[in-house]
Image 1 (cartoon, rainbow, N blue to C red):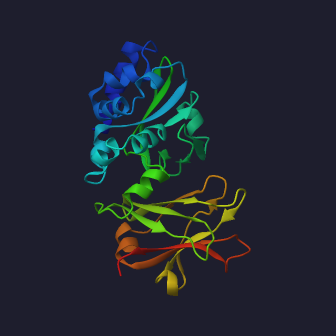
Image 2 (image 1 turned 45 degrees about the vertical axis):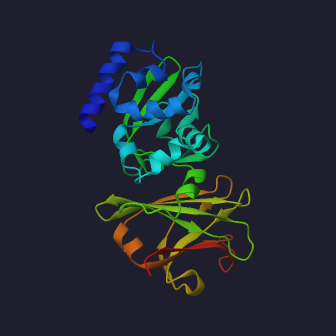
Image 3 (image 1 turned 180 degrees about the horizontal axis):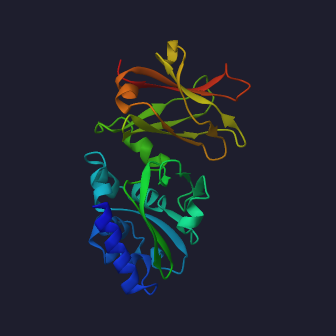
Length: 276
């Protein structure tokens, strides 16, 4: 599917050139029919047909189909969540592939930051970029293989039954710190996992170490998986780890957030992860 999609988009770009808007290109490609339905339901057609320029990370129909059962219907039924999801896929400006690979994050129109990684192919958050630089009259489209979910939607989905390979957990505040959020764990296959932590209430300019510890928050043991520190300004951390998804979610672990590198004994948030 990936090869045929890229070939199709290349053909579309050659035939239409830059005369078509981002919405026109999406409407004309059946692989984006779910995205078009969502954009229409959110009332964003006029916005994404406007002058821009915009950079859109566009999920395919397969990406939407891979969401947890009932998640798409729930988001479509809630205008606020739907708008948050869609605008989280949009970056202001014309950001081409050559620019993307030079970034480690990008601020979305929704307001939160996408994590950008080029260590194992180009990724935005947990999604692989499978086609790039589909040029429109008002910006550019990059095609991705997963739907990106901002904190508001992560919070709404937390606690729902999710399929194997894609799971969320709460990370509550500790001791009235005011720092709390969610962790998303994705099975990347071949014994690797992607761990994305998003927190609210992190002090601006801070740098907060996070780790998976053995045991539970009330009696956590030693560090078993170190993760990338949470950036206080954006509130996010994104780490690809050489640890099987089943090992993380099949055991008993605690995700601990420390106040600062020189204040490791102060825990500001902690969430239990995995089975008892």
